[in-house]
Amino acid sequence: MSTPSLAGKTIAVVATDGFEQVELDQPVAALKAAGAKVEVIAPKAGTIQGFEHHDKGQTVAVDRTIDDADPDTYDGLVLPGGVINPDALRLEPSAIAFIKAFHTASKPIAAICHGPWTLIDAGVVNGRRVTSWPSLQTDLRNAGADWVDEEVVVDDGLVTSRNPNDLPAFCAKMIEEFAEGRH
Image (tube, rainbow, N blue to C red):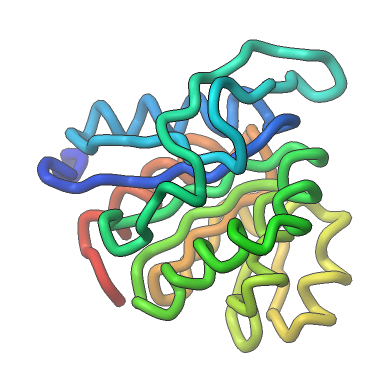
């Protein structure tokens, strides 16, 4: 089965310092390979620091700050994990508003590992079937989600996965949902 084309689509990747390197790099590479334009959006300009689990990884250039990004110009949203990244984003009202805008517009969202933490604050998970890093299951259930331990879960345009081992399935479903568009 061939990968759906994302030609003409622009995808936002929202992250900040402390993102899990592979959970940003692999989805971005997969999206670009499918023909999408990808922009890294962060609370600050310049670069953001990646991590490889507990160790510093590489920095990634920020294409646009959240305050300068308009959710209406993007076709989908990716939320990489890493413990520090989503925890810091939860404290950024502009980041939460940006994420919530995708949900309100019924645009597809893909979140992996600790990334779904931000979905709680954006009010996205109530009544939704999701997965995540196991330590988030109580938080997600308390927010009204039906948390399951599966490689990848798709619920009406919301794609979630547990960890870097799930990236092949996560990327495939993410591209499929982004190709379908609004749900």
